[in-house]
Length: 274
Image (tube, rainbow, N blue to C red):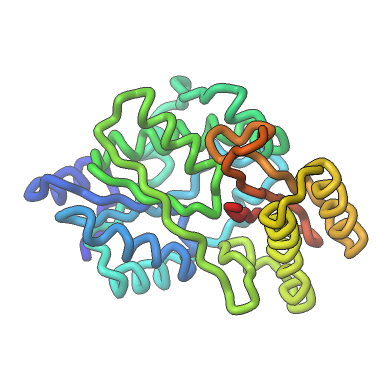
């Protein structure tokens, strides 16, 4: 496995290949990331993973400075999963001057749900992903479906800019009790980790009710919010939306239920397609 610290090194290492598959990460890798790497491996003639903690997508009060950096174990796990090249630029390399050109996704998709509670988040995500796409020039890029809205935003960005990149979603990997794997799970105390499964259970309860024919979506959402709040959570949203554009559903729409909530100081997100 090769390490590229600069764009020039990356392009030199990619020189012999024609169809790169790409998995962008912020490091602190868990089995969910490695599942994406294994999914991407047969989709190209070389597999690139990036490790870059992107300052642009963190709000001032969020955990950029304390976000775990686990370089040695990340590299060991990527190599074992079949990664060929790790692109790990410094901030100075990726942003050699202030990044004044930015990608602004449409408000109706990016200023709802995560974008409502984390203003500017998707501008930071789209800008860094566009830049990483420019560096790696992949034919395929794989993103986790746990970040459902993010996957949708990036997929639409690639379509609208006519990027020659197939944006593929990877299924959410879960612990045995159903908790979605996330880098931020490492922030949970032992008791919080036990409680954390309630987020996925709340989504499952909503999804089961919708599959059984429930039509009062507002009531289901309110019940889910109240149930988590009663357990000491601070939920931002537990909603049912149509999969296509994450807007309020109409009769017959294919649905997804999505949630974000804080448990102690840790904010967790999850979703289930209905």
